[in-house]
Length: 280
Image 1 (cartoon, helix red, strand yellow):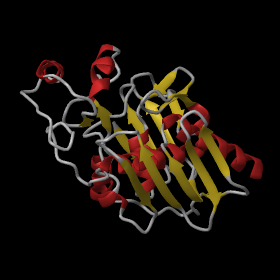
Image 2 (image 1 turned 60 degrees about the horizontal axis):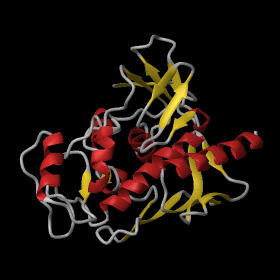
Image 3 (image 1 turned 180 degrees about the vertical axis):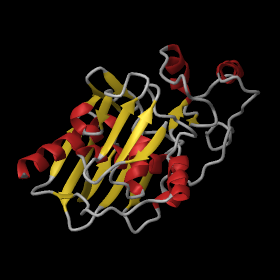
């Protein structure tokens, strides 16, 4: 994947170089085609999967316009966070362009919810941008985690390093259904919510092609150390920032979310985009 400068007003556009020069996918909520464990965009015959971490880094670091050239379906997962994208942007530097930033405000609040789970994403009109997330999986390991971000907080240090996570009992199903083909125990926090046998542990570590891995006393696999006590909550915040960027610009809104996920996030982005288009 290569990121290239784009002119003012270009926004974020993906080009599938393996499909030809014209295989463009614009990063807008109208193009969301799947939210099964990640966010996939499709336009014409071209699709780009797992865009949320890159979209989050572009937003957190203040990048308005970029052409993303990709020679495959999926944006590289790297360590399961946005850290390496943020570090690459910092090394390369950003160019200030001779055009005003597109900052969208809301005429009225937008909320999408899932009554069955109680999950919601709410955006309210505000003069500033802020995000507050509460994560509750009913897990005795995770507990209830909260995370917040606004542009006064160092995104690269506080949000970007937070890695994706998965429950141990999901792993075998995901492998069997080819859903984590690019995953390994170095790019995911693994939460062991229920008792497992040594045989189960050995089978999973064998699938990852790694030596023996054990369970820590706090209920996580011992393959890595947490960057923050609420790293999983911060990762959900990272995802939300990336998914909401699909509203097609920077938002001036107070965002609060309870148990957010890619489906609700992108539905909220679509609702915001619809309101913005009505304003024009």
